[in-house]
Each structure stands twice: as structure tokens, then as C-alpha cells.
Image 1 (cartoon, rainbow, N blue to C red):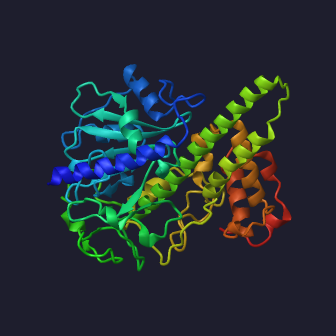
Image 2: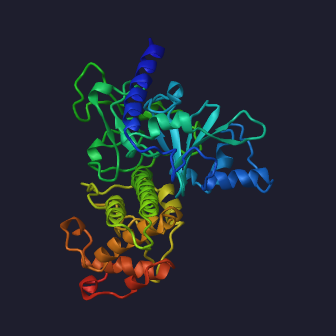
Length: 439
């Protein structure tokens, strides 16, 4: 019965995402050419180093190649987040007793299940959005292999805006970890209300009075009344994982980061397709102008605007009560260790956790390689829109959370920590400078 039930869930999911994906863009056509061997991401670089003998993966007795992979990719083990719902291709191994662990760096995501023969990796690729790999644990000479076909059945759907991307889902899981499909699920982003997050996930740390769906299993025969589930956090076996936490702050940063990475990829795909079409049309019309066609500029603007709003944390779900990670929080220490700070000690990685995730609402990913490698037309447009907000030239109320002191603080941080900061951002307008400076 269990096998058929799992088969039904997987088949239903694949049918849904396949029909959705067919209506999306052809990612194998030019200029994306997703299935081509050309790739630019951390796994490509790591595999090249392994092939050249410059790096080596060492197998651990308990965790296989996992610790060595994390170290080689500079992924802190403190980012560990544990999901016990059966919502990945290793569903047969996953349960509240044997959760899947997810680890992440600024441009890489690693998945591992105790007892599994494979390590899963999703890499942020600067041409293809997201590329998916597996590493066989049994191999004496480990090698990362691309898994386009298997992974894209779920990772290129409406849940990822029709492009290869990342998914965080919140579900009502039953006692074995099966999602109760009729109760629905939520694709989690930083705009998702806290009370709808983390269904099917373990959550550690101090959440205050904030209600959420983490650490709970639900009865399929009962209505999904909010927070009516039974706690299951005690079912994990200590020592089965490299870390002892599934930190609430790590989960929130993960959700924000995935949101931005998906939108960077979406903007990149749309801009490259628009520019490709622009070139084809000019060739047909024998036009010589170096400027963009009006339709091309509109398409790029339409693709970039959602990314800009995500970078500026527009519509971020508020935190009703202050939260804390594990005390002391190893994740917060590891996350902050990557910070570039100004002469007042401030950084875009500074956490708030009182009413919002970050103290200064401009994503640290604006300084990422993924953003830097956007098509120039898209990156320039994104920076123009962000600059207008930070310098007080955009009165749209969706940016009201960026009051004058915060805008000024962000500009000051960027001047000292970001070499690629646009030159025209260095001139502070009176509107941006108004108000006291946040310390």
C-alpha cells in the first residue's frame, strides 16, 4: 500500500508539472541551450579541480563524502535545514525519523539523506539558471553527474516560473511524511506569512509567539485546522547529522536566497531571449542601430522589476514577535562571517529578527556573481531602478519600508564594501540623506 501511495503522489506531481512546463519557454532552444555541456557554476569548477588532482574528496565513515563536499564548496555545515516531508526524488528514504538535510552557500545547495547512496546538488549557473547534479557515495573516485531530465520534471514548472529553479514547499505531512495533497501546499518565499511556513520541516531556535507549521504531522482524516498537528521533533536520532540544528534563521535566509536566485535566473532568461529576438529582427529588417527595439526594452523591464522588488525585500512577510536561532546560533555566526563591513561595522548581512529578516533591506545577493553576470542590459536596468529607490526618486508606496535613514545607511555600506557600486549612487540626494543615520 505504501509503495502504491508514493507512486500515485509522484505520478500526480509529474503530470501536473509536465503539463505546466510544456506551456513554458523552450529552454533547449537558443540562446539558453540548457542541455548543452557548456556550464559556469561551482560544481564545474570543483570537478575540474578534482580531475586535475588539485582537490580531493575524502569519504567519512558516518556521512560519506558529505563533509568533504561541503568543505570543498565552502558551504557551512551550520546552514543545515531538515525537511521530513516526502517531497523529493529520494522520498522513499525520507520520514519524520529520517529527514533530508539541506545545506547552502551563496550560490550552491546540497541535499543529503541518511542512508542514501547519493548526494544531491543544485548549482546556480550563470548561463542556465540552475543545474542539478548527483554524487554517488559508493564510488571510489567520486564524480558529479548532471541530472537534467530527472530533476527538471519538478524543478522547471509553474513553481519555478517555468525555468530551471529551486523550490521550498510547506505541506501538511502525515505521520510518515506523506504530504496530504487535499490540504494543499504553499510555495515558500520571503513574502509568505510565517504561519504558513515550514510544514514538513524541522525548526529549531526561539520562535517566540510566532505560529508556524514546522515540527508537526497531521491526521489525514481531520480538517487541516491551523496548528492542530502533533509535534514530532523528538523522533530524530542524535548523531545522524553533521549538525544538531535546523535553525529557523537559516530557513528564513534560505527562503529569501532561493527567491532571489530564481528571479535572477528568470530575468536572465527573459533578457537573453529578448536580446536574441532583437538581433534576429534587426537582421531580417537590415537595421544597423545599436539601440534596443522598444519591445525589447519593455520585455527586459518586465523581467527585471520582480527581481528588483525581491532584492529590496518588497512585500516581505513581517515577523509578529522577535525570533532567535539556536542559542548561541552557529548559523548566525557562520552567515555573518562572510560579511563585508563599513567603518561603522554595518553590513547587508546584518540580521534584524525583531520585525523583519535583515536590518538593511537590500539583499546581500546584489553583490553576488550571479547578479554580476546578468546580461548587461538587464543588470543596468536593475541597478537604475534600485538606485532610484535608494536615492529617494521613486515614490511608490511599495518601497515605504525603505525610509530615508535606511536608504542612507545602505548607500553608506555599499560605498565602502562594493567596488562595483554605480558611480551615480555615490552622490546622495537630499531625499536620501534626510533623517538620522541608522547605526
